[in-house]
Image: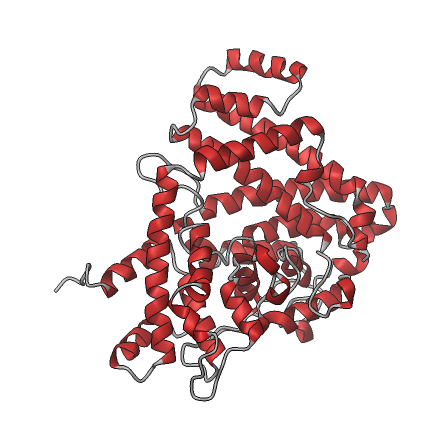
Length: 447
């Protein structure tokens, strides 16, 4: 893979209209702006990140998380671009200086495909088909139709990352060709697992559904992504994926700890100890001196958090640059975070262990996951029954409830099921809960 081919301003779905624009914004900055002003991005403000949506204490939701990841991604991209240009000045006239803009835009989009209620939403969808009432669809024939093995893999391994790629590229009803019509490089930069669901194995991670295979292949071919093992549906990652992933890894780890402190799941002493462990004794001494000036506890935690983020940005930048050749060859293994220096690596792993033990298994987090599982499973059961038995009177009522942008009456079974998943995964937590209550008769419109 080479940088000249990897960074393209060509827009997906608008290839025939590709031309140089005479304006101050670059094509990649236009990607960023297009995402910021989009309805799916705005809906992230009402989707759970980890903790239940805020009451009296504000914690992160998917929107604030995505904005912060985008900021960190921009720093990573700018630092990497600057260093590569110093090494390879011949790339100054390429799009390489735009890496910061590309990564920040991809970071904005990385969670767009996640359903409501955090990661429990993904699990609820997958297990509905693998363990729940959707299991009977595996071999069932409806009007001569049956799901193919590949389509079944899509459903039983439902993945938010693959769903984000679909959201950005699929032509929904009444929309233009190419979906968001993003640049090829921004689209490639969000696909963490560039292979099909049939190659996901037990990890349930993949990058695109059957319906988007050709779209991804087209992008991969244009950008020169390395095909792995000569498999037509398995590619090496686009190099910028590593920076998007690192920005996400840095932010969710730090912000979950800060949120846990605000919610008193972690004490101030525990939080300071966790964050201090990233630094050498000399750096810790300087931080303690700063605490004499900044005495507010929350500000001290915020200062520590920002210091750790700065450290991890420098570390991940170094790892990327040290392994640039392997990344371009498609032979680099693991994430950038897993290759950082020993001291911050040990601290990061300890933070991850504490997060699993004290944060992700806390009562509030488990309660929202349980509720989300129930809500999504119920909505899926009713909507899937509606699209597989549309002749029923109740099915017709449900189908008419769905926005016209979703092709809920598609002639192909797989497409109807996908339309249901598009509809449900696009919901906010509040909308999903409200619809659940109305369907169950627990909430009725005012009469």
